[in-house]
Amino acid sequence: MSDKLGVFGNPIKHSLSPRIHSLFAEQTGRHVDYQRLLVSPYGFSSAVAGQFSQGLVGANVTVPFKQAAYRIVTQHLGSAAHSGAVNTLISAPHGGLIGANTDGDGLVAALKSKGVSLAGRRILLLGAGGASRGVMPALNAEKPDVIWVWNRTPSRAEQLASLFDSAQVLRHWSSARKPDLIINATSASLFGESLALPEHLLDADTVGYDMVYSRDATAFQSQFKASGGGVCFDGLRMLVEQAAVSFSLWFSCDKPETEAIYHQLRNEL
Ligand code: ATR
Image (cartoon, rainbow, N blue to C red):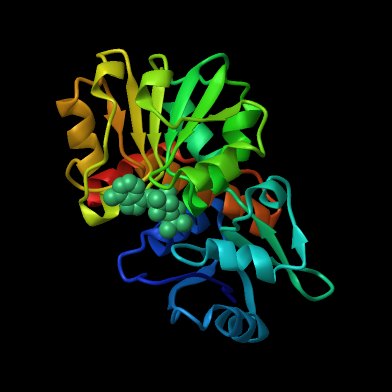
């Protein structure tokens, strides 16, 4: 019999998660039935309750429900307690749901797989929404020199930065030194919108990471290059890595191998 899993989101049609988890299941000799679960904007908690009562053993949560997921779980695992956002739901043994956030571990693993180290580095994080909240604990734990948080709406950046010791709000580009790494956690790329990038702070050594992925360059990747930045990755590796951590939580197993699966998905995009 297959273990029932799924991903809640809206939109959800193009999610790669079913494909990724079926590859993990194949690799680890398990049988899973992983579905895309489209949820209406106000129907999240009832959809989750309904699916888990029908035998779901675990789920992922994606845009725009990660903060709602944080609020409905009965227990937060690890960094989810500090991030205010949950991307992984696990059925608790005695009822209720456990919430985890694997995005941060996924991002850090993705950066390491590209040879990007974080300890002692200057990081500029663009955005202060759910995506940024999710990755902040893991970035902070890597002990960077500083994480500057920039957001279009500065009050949200202030709120987020106040929770982490290595974070500072960046209100004006002029107050920053050159970052080693710029991470785009805004949703601008999703809508093909460009961001105000501090061009004078970028050079060929500046590394970029867009949490959004795409077959062709994302809007952020194109802009980063045009602004004089160096190598800039899209978010596909992060997607695979966060999925691997979720899989290991659902099945209490080691993280599946990700390298070959990442390359396979890249070819399939
Ligand atoms: P998510 O949970 O996916 O992060 P969100 O909470 O709506 O979604 O946050 C989206 C982030 O993208 C926010 O930081 C948002 O900035 P605001 O807080 O000012 O809204 C940012 N964002 C979206 N479109 C943007 C744009 N065109 N330029 C700059 N920032 C943008």
